[in-house]
Length: 242
DNA sequence: GCCAACGTTGGC
DNA sequence: GCCAACGTTGGC
Image (cartoon, rainbow, N blue to C red):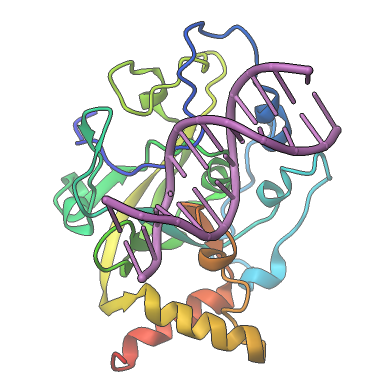
């Protein structure tokens, strides 16, 4: 773990005293079980036409449905400004990412089941927006790509980590992370305010950002974008700021 | 710094 | 299984 602490996504860190006394009910309901089947190969350049090709495998529970869908693009929130969480600075800006070896980092610290399930759905090569949150100027600053698919998040077992989870067992880790690599800065900063203006307009006229999760699931730190949403947001970098 | 949104926890 | 209390997220 050569990396500074970063990213965050809490909401479920249980500071219980007793270790693995019980499996939280909420976990069973909102998380997909450990599936034995390895995900088939990434939909690389295959016939996947993005959103149109999402597939739903067998229905299990209500909460897990997002995890059964194949998405192609993502948005990852990270805090670019210093903030202490249990005495540890969780700041991780795009500049911090660029400073990593290979401009690559593990996306640890996600402690929300829905976000975790999205992490687990990510495939190598898929692109994501790097979004600065909880800061002066929230918005999209860069594009990153998935370079390693979900594997256990080691910070859940580290008592000194702000995202330590005493209820997680090594034999059956609750939390996952992926590795992401910097691809490029967006041609300009794309502020939340601008994306939101389009979202509001699209709610009225049925445009691509109508159901963007940035607004419909405002607290979710890992979220999927449809092909249409991704393309539309990307097209904004060619425009002049408002 | 405020506070609305919303996920989690736990009493009943 | 409901729901009030609580804690976190994150814009403003």
